[in-house]
Image (cartoon, rainbow, N blue to C red; front, top):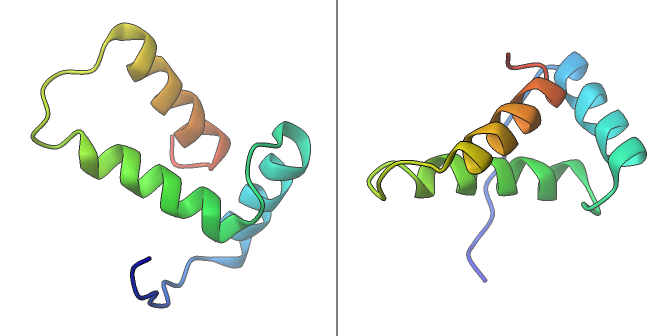
Length: 68
């Protein structure tokens, strides 16, 4: 496993992420959710286009986190 570093986000965004986890499940912590979202976004940078389903899934996650 990779070494971890600290990333700071606003309290408001943290609370939204925490609420998302409580309501939707699938993640053990806000850290896990944030790491997943970043991996998803960054892994697609040079990997080609997303399918319409994948694109909608990413948009849903970003909406739930308050980014869009």
